[in-house]
Length: 151
Length: 220
Image (cartoon, rainbow over all chains, first blue to last red; front, side, top):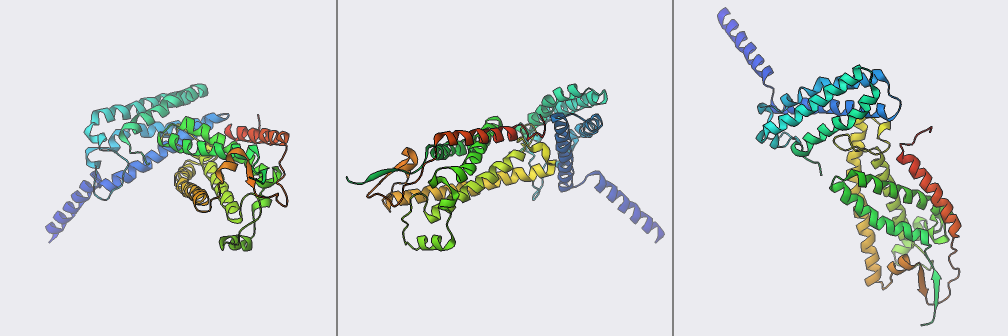
Protein backbone atom coordinates (compact mmCIF):
# COMPACT_ATOMS: atom_id res chain seq x y z
CA UNK A 1 0.00 0.00 0.00
CA UNK A 2 2.64 2.38 1.10
CA UNK A 3 4.99 1.45 -1.75
CA UNK A 4 2.15 1.84 -4.16
CA UNK A 5 1.45 5.28 -2.84
CA UNK A 6 5.08 6.20 -3.20
CA UNK A 7 5.27 4.77 -6.71
CA UNK A 8 2.03 6.50 -7.53
CA UNK A 9 3.17 9.86 -6.26
CA UNK A 10 6.56 9.50 -7.90
CA UNK A 11 4.83 8.68 -11.17
CA UNK A 12 2.50 11.63 -10.77
CA UNK A 13 5.46 13.78 -9.92
CA UNK A 14 7.36 12.63 -12.98
CA UNK A 15 4.31 13.16 -15.13
CA UNK A 16 3.89 16.70 -13.87
CA UNK A 17 7.60 17.36 -14.41
CA UNK A 18 7.28 16.01 -17.92
CA UNK A 19 4.25 18.21 -18.49
CA UNK A 20 6.01 21.20 -17.04
CA UNK A 21 8.93 20.59 -19.37
CA UNK A 22 6.85 20.35 -22.50
CA UNK A 23 3.90 22.70 -22.30
CA UNK A 24 1.18 22.25 -24.89
CA UNK A 25 1.45 24.10 -28.17
CA UNK A 26 -1.44 26.32 -27.08
CA UNK A 27 0.41 27.25 -23.89
CA UNK A 28 3.61 27.97 -25.79
CA UNK A 29 1.77 30.11 -28.31
CA UNK A 30 0.11 32.05 -25.51
CA UNK A 31 3.41 32.58 -23.72
CA UNK A 32 5.28 33.77 -26.80
CA UNK A 33 2.43 36.08 -27.81
CA UNK A 34 2.60 37.66 -24.35
CA UNK A 35 6.37 37.92 -24.79
CA UNK A 36 6.03 39.55 -28.21
CA UNK A 37 3.51 42.01 -26.80
CA UNK A 38 5.93 43.11 -24.10
CA UNK A 39 8.65 43.41 -26.76
CA UNK A 40 6.28 45.58 -28.83
CA UNK A 41 5.33 47.69 -25.82
CA UNK A 42 8.97 48.17 -24.81
CA UNK A 43 9.94 49.19 -28.35
CA UNK A 44 7.05 51.65 -28.42
CA UNK A 45 8.20 52.90 -25.03
CA UNK A 46 11.66 53.60 -26.45
CA UNK A 47 10.24 55.31 -29.51
CA UNK A 48 7.89 57.46 -27.42
CA UNK A 49 10.79 58.53 -25.20
CA UNK A 50 12.80 59.47 -28.27
CA UNK A 51 9.95 61.57 -29.70
CA UNK A 52 10.47 64.06 -26.87
CA UNK A 53 13.13 64.64 -24.23
CA UNK A 54 14.03 61.10 -23.18
CA UNK A 55 13.87 60.02 -19.55
CA UNK A 56 17.09 58.01 -19.17
CA UNK A 57 15.63 55.73 -16.47
CA UNK A 58 12.62 54.85 -18.61
CA UNK A 59 14.85 54.25 -21.64
CA UNK A 60 17.00 51.88 -19.57
CA UNK A 61 13.91 50.05 -18.31
CA UNK A 62 12.49 49.54 -21.82
CA UNK A 63 15.87 48.49 -23.21
CA UNK A 64 16.24 45.96 -20.38
CA UNK A 65 12.83 44.44 -21.18
CA UNK A 66 13.86 44.10 -24.83
CA UNK A 67 17.24 42.57 -24.08
CA UNK A 68 15.59 40.31 -21.51
CA UNK A 69 13.34 38.84 -24.19
CA UNK A 70 15.56 39.00 -27.25
CA UNK A 71 17.59 35.88 -26.43
CA UNK A 72 14.40 33.85 -25.92
CA UNK A 73 12.86 34.37 -29.34
CA UNK A 74 14.51 31.32 -30.92
CA UNK A 75 13.27 29.17 -28.05
CA UNK A 76 9.72 30.50 -28.36
CA UNK A 77 9.49 28.70 -31.69
CA UNK A 78 10.97 25.32 -30.82
CA UNK A 79 10.07 22.10 -32.62
CA UNK A 80 7.45 21.30 -29.97
CA UNK A 81 5.65 24.60 -30.67
CA UNK A 82 5.25 24.11 -34.40
CA UNK A 83 1.51 23.67 -34.76
CA UNK A 84 -1.57 22.06 -33.33
CA UNK A 85 -5.15 21.86 -34.51
CA UNK A 86 -7.32 24.66 -33.23
CA UNK A 87 -4.43 26.92 -32.23
CA UNK A 88 -4.40 30.25 -34.01
CA UNK A 89 -0.97 31.68 -34.58
CA UNK A 90 0.58 34.14 -37.00
CA UNK A 91 3.75 32.02 -36.96
CA UNK A 92 4.38 30.81 -40.50
CA UNK A 93 5.53 27.23 -41.25
CA UNK A 94 8.68 28.76 -42.75
CA UNK A 95 9.95 29.18 -39.17
CA UNK A 96 10.39 25.42 -39.01
CA UNK A 97 11.01 24.59 -42.66
CA UNK A 98 13.73 27.26 -42.95
CA UNK A 99 14.77 27.14 -39.34
CA UNK A 100 18.37 28.23 -39.90
CA UNK A 101 17.20 31.44 -41.61
CA UNK A 102 14.67 32.03 -38.87
CA UNK A 103 17.26 31.62 -36.14
CA UNK A 104 19.57 34.00 -37.96
CA UNK A 105 16.80 36.62 -38.13
CA UNK A 106 15.92 36.09 -34.47
CA UNK A 107 19.53 36.41 -33.34
CA UNK A 108 19.89 39.63 -35.36
CA UNK A 109 17.21 41.03 -33.06
CA UNK A 110 19.10 39.76 -30.02
CA UNK A 111 22.29 41.48 -31.19
CA UNK A 112 20.56 44.84 -31.77
CA UNK A 113 18.61 44.61 -28.50
CA UNK A 114 21.85 44.08 -26.56
CA UNK A 115 23.49 47.00 -28.37
CA UNK A 116 20.51 49.15 -27.43
CA UNK A 117 20.73 48.11 -23.79
CA UNK A 118 24.46 48.90 -23.71
CA UNK A 119 23.80 52.39 -25.10
CA UNK A 120 20.93 52.93 -22.65
CA UNK A 121 23.04 51.80 -19.70
CA UNK A 122 25.80 54.16 -20.79
CA UNK A 123 23.24 56.98 -20.78
CA UNK A 124 23.83 57.61 -24.49
CA UNK A 125 20.34 58.81 -25.44
CA UNK A 126 21.37 59.99 -28.90
CA UNK A 127 22.92 56.58 -29.47
CA UNK A 128 19.67 54.84 -28.47
CA UNK A 129 17.76 57.16 -30.79
CA UNK A 130 20.05 56.30 -33.67
CA UNK A 131 19.77 52.62 -32.84
CA UNK A 132 15.96 52.45 -33.07
CA UNK A 133 15.81 52.07 -36.83
CA UNK A 134 18.27 49.15 -36.81
CA UNK A 135 16.48 47.56 -33.86
CA UNK A 136 13.02 47.91 -35.43
CA UNK A 137 14.49 46.70 -38.69
CA UNK A 138 15.25 43.36 -37.09
CA UNK A 139 11.57 43.02 -36.03
CA UNK A 140 10.58 43.64 -39.61
CA UNK A 141 13.40 41.49 -40.94
CA UNK A 142 11.94 38.49 -39.16
CA UNK A 143 8.21 39.33 -39.49
CA UNK A 144 8.45 39.80 -43.27
CA UNK A 145 9.35 36.17 -43.87
CA UNK A 146 8.09 34.38 -40.80
CA UNK A 147 4.92 36.12 -39.62
CA UNK A 148 1.55 36.03 -41.37
CA UNK A 149 0.20 39.41 -42.46
CA UNK A 150 -3.24 40.09 -41.11
CA UNK A 151 -4.80 41.37 -44.30
CA UNK B 1 -32.85 74.58 -75.66
CA UNK B 2 -34.32 77.25 -73.47
CA UNK B 3 -33.45 77.43 -69.81
CA UNK B 4 -30.76 78.67 -67.57
CA UNK B 5 -27.36 77.44 -66.45
CA UNK B 6 -26.69 78.07 -62.80
CA UNK B 7 -23.64 77.62 -60.59
CA UNK B 8 -24.38 74.67 -58.27
CA UNK B 9 -21.18 73.43 -56.63
CA UNK B 10 -18.28 75.75 -55.90
CA UNK B 11 -14.75 74.84 -56.94
CA UNK B 12 -13.45 74.01 -53.43
CA UNK B 13 -16.26 71.51 -52.84
CA UNK B 14 -15.52 69.85 -56.17
CA UNK B 15 -11.80 69.73 -55.48
CA UNK B 16 -12.47 68.08 -52.12
CA UNK B 17 -14.82 65.57 -53.74
CA UNK B 18 -12.56 64.49 -56.59
CA UNK B 19 -9.44 64.49 -54.43
CA UNK B 20 -11.17 62.00 -52.14
CA UNK B 21 -12.07 59.90 -55.18
CA UNK B 22 -8.36 59.59 -55.89
CA UNK B 23 -6.98 59.51 -52.33
CA UNK B 24 -9.32 56.95 -50.72
CA UNK B 25 -8.46 54.17 -53.21
CA UNK B 26 -4.81 55.23 -53.03
CA UNK B 27 -4.87 54.95 -49.24
CA UNK B 28 -6.34 51.48 -49.50
CA UNK B 29 -3.82 50.44 -52.15
CA UNK B 30 -0.81 51.77 -50.28
CA UNK B 31 -1.90 50.00 -47.08
CA UNK B 32 -2.41 46.72 -48.91
CA UNK B 33 1.11 47.05 -50.29
CA UNK B 34 2.54 47.95 -46.88
CA UNK B 35 3.75 51.25 -48.28
CA UNK B 36 2.97 53.05 -45.05
CA UNK B 37 5.06 56.08 -45.89
CA UNK B 38 2.76 56.91 -48.80
CA UNK B 39 -0.25 55.75 -46.77
CA UNK B 40 0.61 58.35 -44.15
CA UNK B 41 0.98 61.15 -46.72
CA UNK B 42 -2.33 60.20 -48.30
CA UNK B 43 -3.93 60.23 -44.84
CA UNK B 44 -2.54 63.70 -44.13
CA UNK B 45 -3.97 64.96 -47.41
CA UNK B 46 -7.39 63.49 -46.56
CA UNK B 47 -7.14 64.99 -43.08
CA UNK B 48 -6.53 68.44 -44.56
CA UNK B 49 -9.41 68.04 -47.00
CA UNK B 50 -11.74 66.93 -44.21
CA UNK B 51 -10.86 69.85 -41.96
CA UNK B 52 -11.44 72.16 -44.91
CA UNK B 53 -14.77 70.56 -45.80
CA UNK B 54 -16.05 70.66 -42.22
CA UNK B 55 -15.31 74.38 -41.92
CA UNK B 56 -16.63 74.96 -45.44
CA UNK B 57 -19.87 73.33 -44.30
CA UNK B 58 -20.43 76.40 -42.15
CA UNK B 59 -18.92 79.25 -44.15
CA UNK B 60 -18.89 77.98 -47.75
CA UNK B 61 -21.30 78.45 -50.65
CA UNK B 62 -24.97 77.84 -49.86
CA UNK B 63 -25.08 74.37 -51.45
CA UNK B 64 -22.04 73.26 -49.44
CA UNK B 65 -23.40 74.29 -46.04
CA UNK B 66 -24.68 71.61 -43.69
CA UNK B 67 -27.53 73.88 -42.63
CA UNK B 68 -28.78 74.00 -46.20
CA UNK B 69 -28.87 70.28 -46.84
CA UNK B 70 -29.43 68.58 -43.49
CA UNK B 71 -33.21 68.20 -43.24
CA UNK B 72 -35.46 66.72 -40.57
CA UNK B 73 -36.86 63.17 -40.65
CA UNK B 74 -40.15 64.37 -42.14
CA UNK B 75 -38.45 65.83 -45.20
CA UNK B 76 -36.30 62.73 -45.60
CA UNK B 77 -39.32 60.41 -45.38
CA UNK B 78 -41.33 62.54 -47.77
CA UNK B 79 -38.46 62.47 -50.26
CA UNK B 80 -38.07 58.70 -49.86
CA UNK B 81 -41.77 58.33 -50.68
CA UNK B 82 -41.16 60.20 -53.90
CA UNK B 83 -42.55 63.62 -53.12
CA UNK B 84 -39.74 65.14 -55.13
CA UNK B 85 -37.66 68.04 -54.01
CA UNK B 86 -37.49 71.40 -55.66
CA UNK B 87 -34.41 72.58 -53.82
CA UNK B 88 -31.07 72.82 -55.53
CA UNK B 89 -28.12 70.87 -54.17
CA UNK B 90 -28.22 67.73 -52.06
CA UNK B 91 -31.66 66.18 -51.73
CA UNK B 92 -32.85 65.30 -48.18
CA UNK B 93 -31.51 61.74 -48.38
CA UNK B 94 -28.29 62.63 -50.17
CA UNK B 95 -27.46 65.26 -47.57
CA UNK B 96 -27.40 62.68 -44.80
CA UNK B 97 -25.41 60.33 -46.98
CA UNK B 98 -22.76 63.04 -47.41
CA UNK B 99 -22.61 63.62 -43.66
CA UNK B 100 -22.43 59.88 -42.98
CA UNK B 101 -19.50 59.51 -45.39
CA UNK B 102 -17.73 62.54 -43.93
CA UNK B 103 -18.26 61.25 -40.36
CA UNK B 104 -16.90 57.83 -41.28
CA UNK B 105 -13.91 59.43 -42.98
CA UNK B 106 -13.22 61.54 -39.89
CA UNK B 107 -13.37 58.39 -37.75
CA UNK B 108 -11.18 56.47 -40.20
CA UNK B 109 -8.51 59.18 -40.41
CA UNK B 110 -8.78 59.71 -36.64
CA UNK B 111 -8.06 56.03 -35.97
CA UNK B 112 -5.19 56.05 -38.45
CA UNK B 113 -3.49 58.86 -36.52
CA UNK B 114 -2.98 56.47 -33.59
CA UNK B 115 -2.30 53.31 -35.58
CA UNK B 116 0.93 51.34 -35.76
CA UNK B 117 2.21 48.62 -38.04
CA UNK B 118 3.26 45.24 -36.71
CA UNK B 119 6.88 46.18 -36.23
CA UNK B 120 6.23 49.52 -34.57
CA UNK B 121 8.33 51.13 -37.31
CA UNK B 122 5.51 52.91 -39.11
CA UNK B 123 3.03 54.77 -36.96
CA UNK B 124 0.42 57.47 -37.17
CA UNK B 125 1.58 60.86 -35.85
CA UNK B 126 -0.43 60.59 -32.61
CA UNK B 127 0.61 57.01 -31.78
CA UNK B 128 2.82 58.27 -28.93
CA UNK B 129 -0.25 59.55 -27.10
CA UNK B 130 -1.71 56.06 -26.52
CA UNK B 131 -0.45 52.81 -25.05
CA UNK B 132 0.77 49.85 -27.09
CA UNK B 133 -2.42 47.88 -26.38
CA UNK B 134 -4.69 50.83 -27.23
CA UNK B 135 -2.81 51.43 -30.46
CA UNK B 136 -3.25 47.76 -31.34
CA UNK B 137 -7.02 48.02 -30.84
CA UNK B 138 -7.29 51.28 -32.79
CA UNK B 139 -5.25 49.79 -35.64
CA UNK B 140 -7.65 46.84 -35.87
CA UNK B 141 -10.62 49.21 -35.87
CA UNK B 142 -8.88 51.25 -38.59
CA UNK B 143 -8.73 48.13 -40.76
CA UNK B 144 -12.32 47.11 -39.98
CA UNK B 145 -13.89 50.52 -40.44
CA UNK B 146 -12.56 50.76 -43.96
CA UNK B 147 -15.04 48.06 -44.98
CA UNK B 148 -17.94 50.14 -43.69
CA UNK B 149 -16.59 53.19 -45.51
CA UNK B 150 -16.19 51.18 -48.72
CA UNK B 151 -19.78 49.90 -48.42
CA UNK B 152 -21.12 53.42 -48.01
CA UNK B 153 -19.09 54.65 -50.98
CA UNK B 154 -20.43 51.76 -53.06
CA UNK B 155 -23.97 52.78 -52.09
CA UNK B 156 -23.16 56.39 -53.02
CA UNK B 157 -21.85 55.38 -56.47
CA UNK B 158 -24.80 53.03 -57.03
CA UNK B 159 -27.23 55.83 -56.17
CA UNK B 160 -25.56 58.27 -58.52
CA UNK B 161 -25.76 55.65 -61.30
CA UNK B 162 -29.43 55.05 -60.45
CA UNK B 163 -30.11 58.76 -60.89
CA UNK B 164 -28.16 58.76 -64.13
CA UNK B 165 -29.79 55.78 -65.83
CA UNK B 166 -33.21 55.47 -64.17
CA UNK B 167 -34.06 59.02 -63.18
CA UNK B 168 -32.23 60.48 -66.18
CA UNK B 169 -30.64 63.05 -63.88
CA UNK B 170 -26.89 63.44 -64.38
CA UNK B 171 -25.42 64.34 -60.99
CA UNK B 172 -21.86 63.74 -62.12
CA UNK B 173 -21.59 66.58 -64.66
CA UNK B 174 -22.36 69.36 -62.13
CA UNK B 175 -19.91 67.84 -59.66
CA UNK B 176 -17.30 68.02 -62.42
CA UNK B 177 -18.07 71.36 -64.03
CA UNK B 178 -19.86 73.06 -61.19
CA UNK B 179 -22.96 74.20 -63.09
CA UNK B 180 -26.33 72.69 -63.85
CA UNK B 181 -28.75 73.31 -66.74
CA UNK B 182 -32.30 74.08 -65.53
CA UNK B 183 -35.52 74.44 -67.53
CA UNK B 184 -36.45 77.65 -65.81
CA UNK B 185 -35.01 80.22 -63.46
CA UNK B 186 -35.10 78.78 -59.91
CA UNK B 187 -36.79 80.64 -57.06
CA UNK B 188 -33.34 81.38 -55.70
CA UNK B 189 -29.92 80.72 -57.15
CA UNK B 190 -27.29 79.23 -54.85
CA UNK B 191 -24.93 81.86 -53.48
CA UNK B 192 -21.30 81.13 -54.19
CA UNK B 193 -18.61 81.98 -51.63
CA UNK B 194 -15.72 84.17 -52.73
CA UNK B 195 -12.44 82.43 -53.65
CA UNK B 196 -10.56 84.50 -51.06
CA UNK B 197 -12.65 82.94 -48.32
CA UNK B 198 -11.80 79.47 -49.62
CA UNK B 199 -8.10 80.36 -49.53
CA UNK B 200 -8.38 81.54 -45.93
CA UNK B 201 -10.17 78.35 -44.88
CA UNK B 202 -7.61 76.27 -46.80
CA UNK B 203 -4.79 77.99 -44.91
CA UNK B 204 -6.45 77.20 -41.57
CA UNK B 205 -7.09 73.58 -42.63
CA UNK B 206 -3.49 73.18 -43.77
CA UNK B 207 -2.17 74.56 -40.48
CA UNK B 208 -4.33 72.18 -38.42
CA UNK B 209 -3.31 69.23 -40.60
CA UNK B 210 0.38 70.13 -40.36
CA UNK B 211 0.16 70.47 -36.59
CA UNK B 212 -1.47 67.04 -36.20
CA UNK B 213 1.02 65.45 -38.61
CA UNK B 214 3.83 66.71 -36.35
CA UNK B 215 2.30 64.80 -33.45
CA UNK B 216 0.15 67.69 -32.18
CA UNK B 217 2.93 69.28 -30.07
CA UNK B 218 1.78 71.68 -27.38
CA UNK B 219 4.99 73.68 -27.69
CA UNK B 220 7.41 74.32 -30.51
